[in-house]
Amino acid sequence: MSQINIDGIRKSLKQKATTNRKKDMFDFLNRDIKLFDSGLNDKKKESFYSELNILFTAGIDLRTALELIEEEQVKEKDKLLFGKIKNSIVSGAGLSKSLEQTGMFDAYEFYSIQIGEESGRLTDVLQELSIFFSKKIQQKRQLVAALSYPLIVFCASFGAIFFMMKFVVPMFADVFKRFKGELPYFTRLIINLSDSFSSYILYFLFAVVVVLLFFYSQRKVFWFRKYSSVFLLRIPVLGNMISKIYLARFCQSMNLLISARTPLITSIELVKKMINFFPIEYSLKFIQEDIMKGQSLYFSLSKYSIYNKRMIALIKVAEEVNQMDIMFSKLAKQYSDEVEHQTSLLGSLIEPIMIIFLGLLVAVILVSMYLPLFQMSSTVG
Image 1 (cartoon, rainbow, N blue to C red):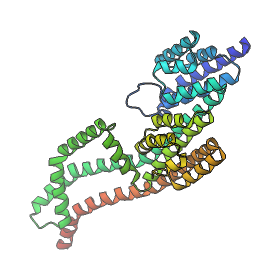
Image 2 (image 1 turned 90 degrees about the vertical axis):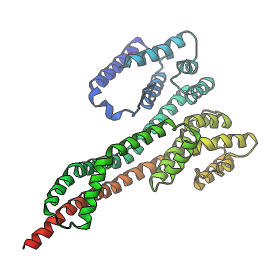
Image 3 (image 1 turned 180 degrees about the vertical axis):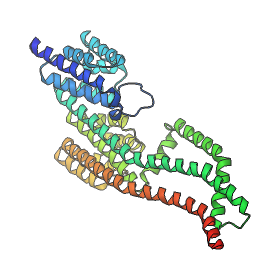
Image 4 (image 1 turned 90 degrees about the horizontal axis):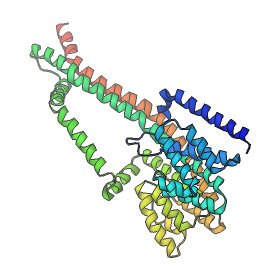
């Protein structure tokens, strides 16, 4: 690789970094949502593996490639991270060992890269890792897209109800007290709810906060992970979509490791660390034991309901013809396409339903408040 080409690539990456700085105002729209930024997010990892693969393919050595990636970084902590990896490479360590020493990359990543280094297929592994994180980001965004609109409408509904119960209904109640007449049933019901709402709203909000904190503290406990995943999978439509998201991630992970010639037992062990979803993670523990005893993968998978029958049948065929990497790749693409279709369909269905629900709710409150006025006008008439 000539100095001119390296300088050209360096200039291109610097221009990209400058462009990223200019887009910082709107870049939050494309970032992963993380409460605690403890390391590289999926977006940064996808970019790292993609650029490293491109630079390798262009014939640039590992040290120079890491220098170029380091110069491109906008944040100082990212510069320090990639500088640390580069210095480790210069001191004689391999790429997989250098990534492991940072503590920012999991076993799934540096083991895959180690397999690529030993087999001479490092560029292929880097490309597969880039695709894996790209798919993971896409699936996460699809799930967020499916849940964000209902959540926004729910918050808007709660805000509208809070305003009406706290301010509008008491105003009408003061007017009705002057009439000293019998109010309609629905009007009395709404007024009583408003009185209770004003008295207990702070207790209700406190209880919600306590419940959320309790769930957050228990999120890694066995019983909570088990029953929360069972609850999610039983939600109509949404449960099926969540299942396919994690099955797509499982198939994509298996495709990456098997195509890198990783032993099946080792692949399952690594995937178990990567798939943060209890039904799959829990089942892989026993599936690994079954395979060590000589059972086939498809037979072990068939014991658990999270893996559907069609998937098991295809894996059985793939095992018989020794084409499991190809089959897992096709399954991952199929599940990803299905999730994308279901997400768009779910969004188009939920939007009118939530709007109608909010409209009816507000209408019931308003009609209940105006009903006595209608009765008074008819009486006077």
